[in-house]
Length: 529
Ligand code: TNX
Image (cartoon, rainbow, N blue to C red; front, top):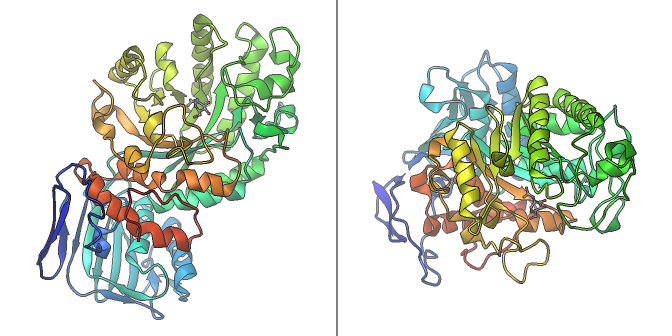
């Protein structure tokens, strides 16, 4: 029996077979240069996000040319789809045929739905490897999908090889594990977002929040207000041509994400951040005059005309069409930085906008400024404050949490992927300070906000704003590797959150990121493989 223990950041590997990965690691910083370089992590210790429990032991399975993926005799269509997608994901790097079979028992990779495995919940799974194969068990297809992503990490980066014997039993800490991307400040093609969905799903992130509209561009076609996209979409920061997604393109993205168990949360930001809409329709302006389109990076200068009834027809039409396009339960209505909307108007506007969301059968998500107005029953608040956010603002959010509003945590000085790592980072901003990889990882979402219990935290979201990010490589450089740490904060048990151990797990991901052609920041605090 080989017991792996972490104490004061030191890896102590005792001889024997099998490794129990302990989640009782001592916390603390390991400042010694090169610390941890000595011990290469075994496959079950390398998993990222760290699973709730993992144990190596027994004979392994030889994954090779004869491997079949088996979905079981009466597998529902969704399970077969999970099997097909897993086969596709494994074929690329391994070059193996990996046929997907139903029906017969046999060696290979077996996907099993087991409704009786209550302990696995809505997204959990068990993965068991023996000489005859790897069995993935879950109560839901989503759980099987996550199990498949774990299996990918147990396999060699390229080619065939042995999956070591062992077992993982894993469930997420938080139900909501999100990533936001701002496709408004710069337009990005759906293909780039799909690539991101694959990257997110691989680390068990289950929500894609799309910031679809802002001062600089309106990126989604709305049939009842067509100029929003055709005129309001034809601009972006820096004066580029911009662009927008058709409804078909958006639906295609939503379906692609759904196949990877990622829900889309669309955001229409209101009542501020609306210059693109005001520029497209003069009637939305209080004075009836449309402003110029905007290609700068200021915030807080635009507002919908709160006193005009036409504004609410607009809100109803837009949210109605977005709700109809989106199968998920949430609609995000922004509500941040409405500096040009007086407080009373803001509250009145948000009352009506929230009612429209409810009318279309969705649950409101809004930035945490809604806490200063009147969040509707069930509304979810997304916190984006930082260490210097005034205590009064935090208390308003804490009070809303106590009143029953779930919170999504995106602290700007930890979870904002557009913050530069350090002064040498070229893309991005630094208004919330530099956010190195260690800082982004080193916080506990369950105890982050004073007077907010873990039970009020729906989850964690990594946000990528794009004022200063225009290309795929800039996007990836800023997201990777911080996204992986935020994925772990959302998924792994609190006891597994440990920087000295995490930096080794992260270092071990480098060959995978490279094999996928992902641009990433080789942070100096990580002993990259
Ligand atoms: C704040 S976070 C904003 C965005 C900016 C971002 C840049 C939030 C709700 N509003 O409008 O893009 O900072 O980091």
